[in-house]
Amino acid sequence: MSRVQNITDLAVGLLAALFIGISKAGFGGGLGLLSTPLCVLAFGPRDAIGILLPLLCAGDVFSLWHYWGKWERKNLVYLLPGVVVGVVIGVQLIGRFSARELNVAIGSLAMFFVVFQVGKEVIFRAEGTFKPNGWIGLPFGLGAGVTSTFAHGAGPLVSMFLIPQRLSKVVYVGTTVLIFTWINWIKVPFYCLDRHIVDWSWVPPEAIINRHTLLSSLRLLPAVPVGVWLGVWLNRKFSEEGFLKFIYLLTFLTGAQLAFNFDLARWFGG
Image 1 (cartoon, helix red, strand yellow):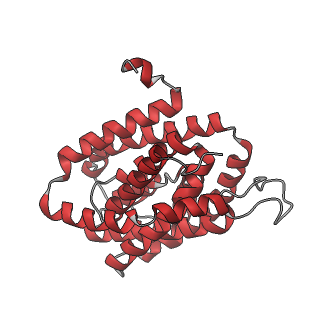
Image 2 (tube, rainbow, N blue to C red; image 1 turned 120 degrees about the vertical axis):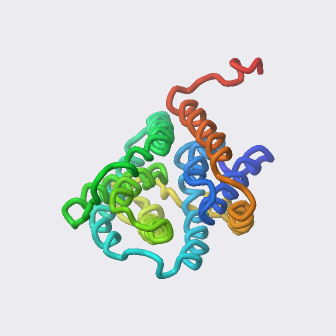
């Protein structure tokens, strides 16, 4: 089982934790999603998502403090029932998918996220304002719960639900912070379940968060507040535009590596 055991793993893990902190500070847009495919390359899919969840929860604490009260609570109410069902389905998929299938799923989601981020300006320019309700929120919450559980990738679906509502930037970011916080903390007990605790067929044989992944998370945790501080500083000093182009390219290539298993060493003469 891959864990933070050598300098390369540690470097990749710290970089992923740093990216989480930067994105939680509101800089870099989809930078946080790059953390998942990067960690999968280093640790394998099951360990990667188990290591990352405590880091995401820690980042949520900083974001929640910064955006406290700057949200529309009704969106959480609309999405939450579907999220809970989606998390249960996502845990079942993790238990049944092979490592290769998880790599393909996570890599494909990363590539989709980049395409969505690049094309979402079309949604912003669309005429009319979308008015959400519980029935519309159910499938979006379901999809967000599933994709977040096996890839920490609920961002595109949550964005698709929120963007057409034409919320102000602060309320939009605050609402996503609230929703992601709930999604991540809902996942925690499910990630800790295994068949030694409950003998249910849909529960993975080994807990996704276990003693080994938790120790790895603790080693990487200091990079999260450093990333938050760095994200706040970057927000004040630099424009996101050029930075995001590089991040989206890197995320797409990393996702392609996972999905299609490219031999990058051969490509670059290694």
